[in-house]
Length: 379
Image (cartoon, rainbow, N blue to C red; front, side, top):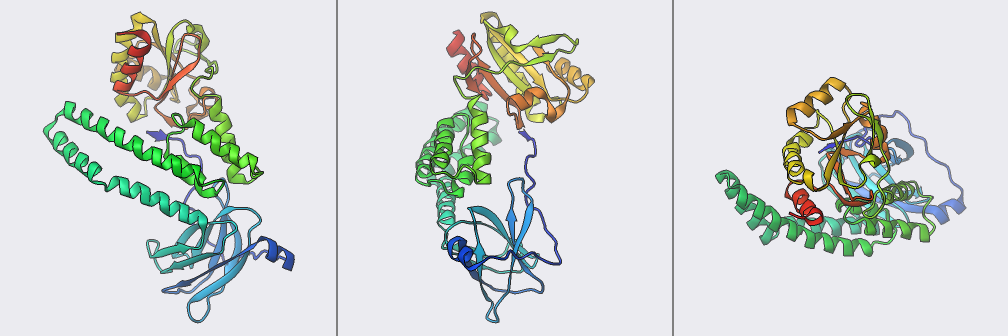
């Protein structure tokens, strides 16, 4: 899957000085937590506390002075829950959620992949429990047995066995996702929940996303930048939730003629975002072609929206892949008006809409597309 880059992550901040935010005694008493720990192998230089903003930038917050016994303790003013990076001499970097708990961080201090232990934080306890849940699933006897069978089937080129094994895995994965959803429900409005919830599909579990967003609003935390970003995303997703009316798209076809998505009302329509340069899209195209020819005479149409930049690339891929359905594009790449309207952050991305223009499914690929079309149109 090709993804549009949204945030800059893993930024390396180099500084010769750090701004220490001053605070009066009242601020320290009401809004401060203690950040402490020890360093196994101290280096020359500074220990920096850097706040990570919503767009992934680093904002200098404070500095830490190491004690002679390699321990440290620092009062840090935290006006609202946030995500911070502790920069140990430019050698080791630890991201940490700071909110209302005192936090203890023990590190090596001399390697990016060195030892890290975070304790005292309820947020990180939640993240540890989430990680344990995912690790236990992947290392379970059932999943390991499926992996062994999959490798054997793959080496033998047994496509039927491979699909059957993938189906069994999806059943196990769904059960594990349900456990994760139950855990999310207990996390409240911690920033940790915003990291964990991204592990579940937002389209098939939109109700969970909505529930978490509502909790932040109910508890008056909607102005936290990370909560605000999440709530805005949920509101955007709501417009494209299953059961919602698909926004109309008005774009030109390869001949320059304007073709509205709404002009296809009366048919079941797959709105398919793709591009010539997107290998996963091209790999899925033969399956979409097969579905089109199987169901086109039963009231099925495809409205392909290309994120290409050059018309010649777009037209060439249509011809090469035998895509004989409706195509539109403004050739604006990720700046496509349709992509913005549908909140498309990665491709392939598709929605199936009914005769009235209502969204009934998302991202149906492989056999799932054929199964859904057979359900709504009949074999």
